[in-house]
Length: 286
Length: 257
Ligand SMILES: Nc1ncnc2c1ncn2[C@@H]1O[C@H](COP(=O)(O)OP(=O)(O)OP(=O)(O)O)[C@@H](O)[C@H]1O
Ligand SMILES: [Mg+2]
Image (cartoon, rainbow over all chains, first blue to last red; front, side, top):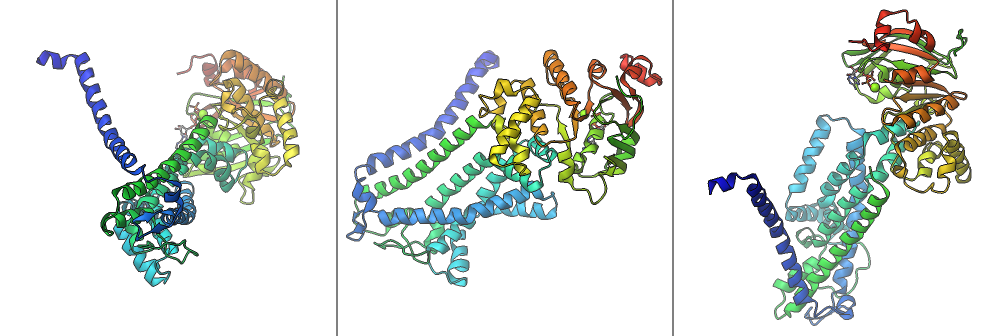
């Protein structure tokens, strides 16, 4: 028996089996979750469900305002967080020398990424809703989500920039390019796929989080579309929460249908990003 | 093979000392590089060949902690003077690196990189510049139908030619080449050498090489460096047949070390 365990070929098989099982365990919950949502939720999916206002205290009709609300929030988040995140990543990776200040910034980014999302919700309530008097609004919600995803964008963009080979920069300088021209033409284009990954990750998070929007934008029941960024809006994750806990006698299918739409939107965004990345990978490689 | 006199040298290096932090990589180097000739820099690994080359387009500025003392004059102007425009200098003094390093973009965009950054030409003129630059390195005929292909699809030799074309497109005066053939096979190497012989009609070329035969074949003058010092500088035939320093002879005959 002990002989057997010392046999390299046997070890090889055991190790392989363990690694394979570990990987399998990761896949199982994902598959189960998706299967459950699809099985329970697909029956309510219809054109009406996607495009109509909710009716009868959200027990019938569609979830259109929540889809629109979440889309606005995601767009608002990215409009705010992408430029700031990418610019600071460029600063950190291309301009700053490593010193006490940049180390402090790095520390802040790491810690920011670990803050629970409900804390961001309270922060947004305090700063954007109350202090800056935006009220509970798409603006306040987007800004709150934006602050939450900034660390993700900065970290992903920075890694993407740093993975661009040094020779690209050297060649560019040696051809007489300035620092900004070098970043703009020899570095950024090649970092784009990685930056995109950060953007999609943060998009998924912004679309799915409930806590940060709870006090800053989400409307319980608002069967009309928001008219400006200072309006409240419904949002998919919050709607799902409301259906599951706050409204009695809702058909279970409605909850699963809402979850299905939310997951579907995130998956579509990921697929689009994967296609774009694949396109870059075919065209650009080093 | 080379003119005996050196009336106006293109590059005058005068008493240059270079420090990386506290380490002195170049020691009191004085050297005149003539126009439209190929000057080869040889010497054992770590003797400062690349460092000297990177002095000439101030690429060492990118390494923090470098200090340069002395003067480097190109066309009579000190390139380390405070008023010097680095962009202008690097346009004029271009560099070819050891490994072929085209950008992972199309062949056309590689050659057009410099011109488009410097706004040298409108979009239409740009294709003209690309054609001229690729012709100058003998790539135009074979590549003219696949300009939009990725530069990485080319062979090593073609990639290195492309890098030279990318340089030629910004119309420099001086080409610095740091072991440009070390990643190529002997046949490709020979063809790049032939290209250098063509290019030297229009450009001043400084090449670093570990290959003695290459230095003997292509260069007009040779500078031998050892531990950051210039040991001997002279016409190629003289260095390879009657070197005046014993160290030089030991190195070129392989009796070194
Ligand atoms: N950035 C740097 N910081 C500190 N020391 C350096 C740096 N770059 C080079 N050196 C040192 O300076 C000396 C000269 O380096 P250089 O690269 O010029 O040598 P070289 O002659 O080109 O060698 P090789 O033939 O191996 O390319 C070496 O001892 C090297 O270790
Ligand atoms: Mg070197």
